[in-house]
Image (cartoon, rainbow, N blue to C red; front, side, top):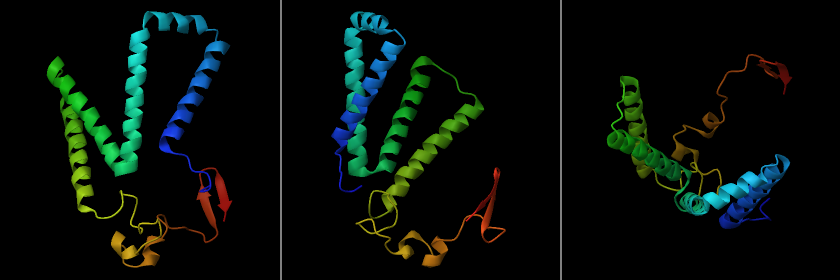
Length: 172
């Protein structure tokens, strides 16, 4: 797996090329090529603007994840959505009921907590407590008393060799 490395822009290009091929096949199979051609003719500039804004957004996401980590990228995305929501409430005069206002307060509070919680952590982009090269690191950094505590199952197992699931028993 590590023999084949794909850069972020190559990956993004290949994903978009695959989506284009699948969309083209869908247009042909559903006999909608003429509808797509008419839409391109009517809304050409808007489609180009939409495509460019989407591409710039994808580049922003890839660069943010590679430089700052997934947590920072998700916080930025959440901040963008909350800002859009608050601007919509303000500019269009929408009114919030108590449940909606509570949800907005929880969302903003969680975002601020995540942002300031990340500032206090030292080391890698929020990828766990391992060392810089992805090793297990020191379990003391993560807050475990000893290494065996980290490997404890979340749910106690009633039988030692089998787990009961909704669909039946699975032997280990």
